[in-house]
Length: 157
Image 1: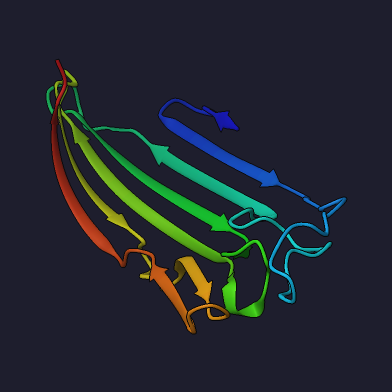
Image 2: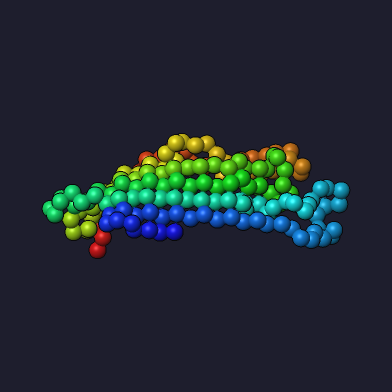
């Protein structure tokens, strides 16, 4: 969804729902004696729900001054599993993140200076989980990036 309800205001968003079910599972797949993929399990990294919403508003600072554009984004991802064989040890919990940005644009739109903050709330969550405990005895996780600040300068030609 994308909307421009009034001059300068932009709204955008998305929502997705995925309901996946294995319908058949071959007995020939997997390692004998080891529990493999079962009906009711889901493929790795396929959340049932995902959503995002963004809002920005261009503020005209005057003909010879330029504009200021604040923006806010919110993203949600439902729980996922890191392995085809779903287990509590490879489940990644759902998470919600927010990003913010303020952009100054010159009157001719040739230059932009932006200050951005990603993972605004400094949410700690897993991006990936490698659950190899049945073969190696280890479970490892890669965390998402923490809150980060970014200052950028852009020249448009």
